[in-house]
Structures are given as C-alpha cells and as structure tokens.
Image (cartoon, rainbow, N blue to C red):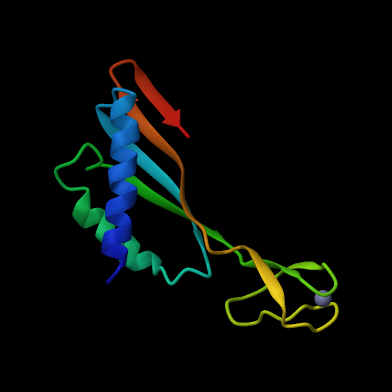
Length: 122
Ligand SMILES: [Zn+2]
C-alpha cells in the first residue's frame, strides 16, 4: 500500500510547516489529488488516521479535493476534461494529447492552532 508512504510525506511536510508557525496543533490538512494518480482515498484516510497518532496532527482532518484529468490535444490544441482511460480529443479524435492536470498531489493549505488562535497556512 503506497498510500502509507505518500501520507507520511504529506504529514511530515504539514508538521514541518506548522511548527515553523509555532503551531500547537493541526486541525485540518487540505490536499489535491489528481484522478490520474493511483491513489485510493480510503487508503489515504486510513493511513492518515494511523500516522497522525502521537503528532501535533493527532486531531486533524484530511480533506481531499479530486482534480479531474485535463489534456490538450497536440493536433488541434483543444483542451478537454476526460476520465482516466479515455484520452481521445473530442474535437478531432486524435490520441496524441499532453496531460495538463490530473497527476498532481499537493498540499493546498493547513489549518493550525497556535497560542494566539486559529490560522490557515498555504
Ligand atoms: Zn484534437
């Protein structure tokens, strides 16, 4: 289950960013996951719940935004959204397309609590 390793990275980066802001706890971590990645959200959530134990993110929620795959046709320049398997240009039928979105995995923002109150870091 490679979600464990991915989540470990997300969590480590979140904690590092939060500690820089003198956070006492992390309340929410928001990430974007492209639908072209092979990441299974339930596995991600499970890994997060396991790995957050004993860290400042112990009470944190993991909010996942799914990013639809989008490509640009190299023949006619059409940009279109598609599902995981159908990479055919809807305009000219070409199979030669550059993927613009859908492969991302990034942290969008993190909600933290500090001694001064609640903060959002991006
Ligand atoms: Zn096309």
